[in-house]
Length: 303
Image (tube, one colour):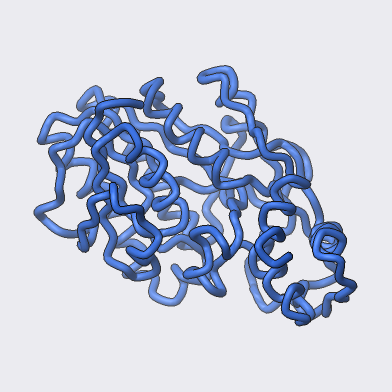
């Protein structure tokens, strides 16, 4: 993408700031964030930061492309205030898309979630049957339905990206997330500091860990190709938490054993794995960073 004026909502957050910084090399980028969880310290000087909410009536909407990443972005975060979650995740999406539409933008790439697939050890394709088991999942499915409306009613192109366990590490732009950071980042920081990470159950739960650099490439490609519909952004491979801890220990040269605790969540996705075929066929996108390489990158600043 070159020479475009771009709005990234949630632009001071983890994924949003990585995307904004990447695009700012060859585009005019505005990062909007209410700092509920994000921090402007994540942003390069080339990015214009605007403090505001996706619920505001006066968004910087004269843009060529909207990347809508703003959200209460986890089950726990959403359940702490379900009404606010619905307002931000659903009303905020409609508000942002409609404002940029009125100013002539017809290309939107937005965050959905892989949580709607539930627990699966087999690859999850976009056309499989899904359901909402949590308010968070319901809000992301609502985005996908509203995206269909904007496409059919106004001819816009809206690509919903179903993320799979995105990580980078605390030396990147993830540290500000704290307890909401990916387990790779949290466990690495704990192990590097001699603390025993807590694993739910027996540690056999699996995740399709996807490095944020690959996700950023996918988001840009989705805009470049003006995709419409929903697409998985995941590697198609999964690792269990026990293996992840072993990999971190090996990379750090440590021998810190995890602590196994009872899962405190009523609703918990035990296993995830993407089927990235649709995204690859549409754009040529493939993950470039293996999990082994990703763990090495997360651990490197501690060595």
